[in-house]
Length: 243
Image (tube, one colour):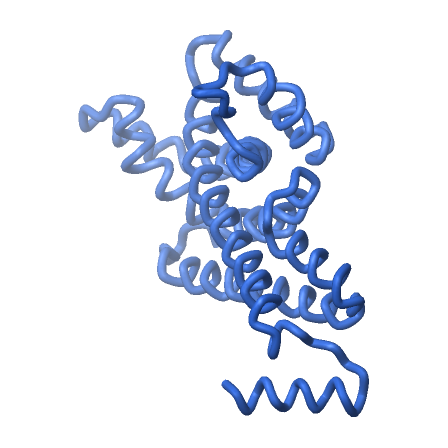
């Protein structure tokens, strides 16, 4: 580790390339904090949005018209308004309106980022799942119902697993967009990767170097997600279905 740090010090002295995150412990700690916060924010939103999207897709097929309209309205609102406006609405409009406990808000900037981005991506996930559900043959649903499955049991055990296999490519794209959208959390001072990098380059005046590092980090994160989803798609593939 000391040899690596020494090499980057030499690189700065000889070329002017200033990558302090490799030899300055303070900058390195801030950068790692931002990187881990981005991973944590992405993981929370990824899991919650997929679960909520699956539930919304199920509710979209409800026999109650009011439920179907409510789900459709939710999807339209979050798909057709800018993500940054949604984030500002939750943090600056809804947040202060909620009651406080011991003088502290219920959620901080990280919590509101999770809420906002989860609801945004859940709206897209719901439409993706809905398309997958429509691709499931009706005969399979009828067969499950003939075996005594309730509507929820048939959805959970038959429809959703098959729909998930059909929607894997679209879901991968949705999850990649989610990771990229986490950069908006910068706007409400969530200490994610871009926010912490901005603090570093404002002090060290090494904007080009940090921009390159940021690009590499996001390419790596997205690349890993793509590889995992492709592996999962292969593992879940059912021969003859969705081909």
